[in-house]
Image 1 (tube, helix red, strand yellow):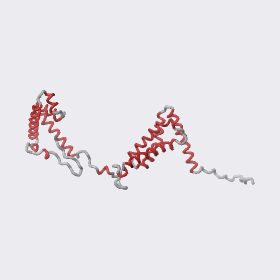
Image 2 (cartoon, rainbow, N blue to C red):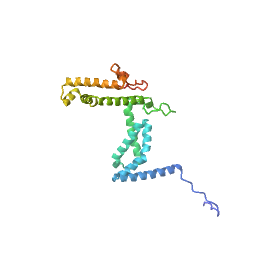
Image 3 (cartoon, rainbow, N blue to C red):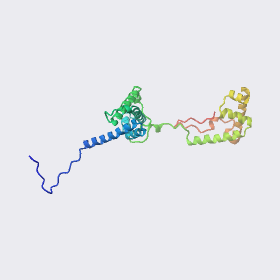
Image 4 (tube, rainbow, N blue to C red):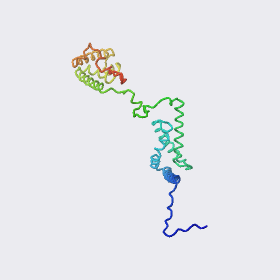
Length: 251
């Protein structure tokens, strides 16, 4: 039976758009074609082509590795290793699968190896410092750690005391200033100072002791709290236990 003829002026049915699966396949084929061209360029010696490959696929590879490892630092490292492996083996890439699939396969293997490496060492029982304290908060475990540096008050006290020592050191006679500089600023041993100054080691020790007494006297004259009878532990701000910082001290 022949198909019925349309009467003049009767609109024909519009052509149906391709199904979503068909459109997705077409997009994947186009992406694979672009990748194939980039692989050819890279194997021909065009290094910029591999940079383009990394830019095109890095985000997806990182998503895969992060999903497997649950650690940003490890995922970044495995993503980088994936492209290193790919660069080394690109000449052997035969195109049996898409470049995206090939890269995905490399990333998954590396991530699995990393996971089992740490699993055998029970790393799964630890938490990253970047791990959030709670799902609805931005804070991480790193925020609970003590700051290794001095707080502003301690830093200011240390700077003021260093300036005071420099001022008092400049007021000493040349021999005392020289030997304290060698010992306390340049950190030479007694034996090294003896060789530099042409003195006996015993003479070096006694001269350093007298130089320190002179410096202490200059400090006491400038600031009464540094008087000889005061304890050095009272010269500085105490450490704050909540910060876990050591007390400032002068050796």
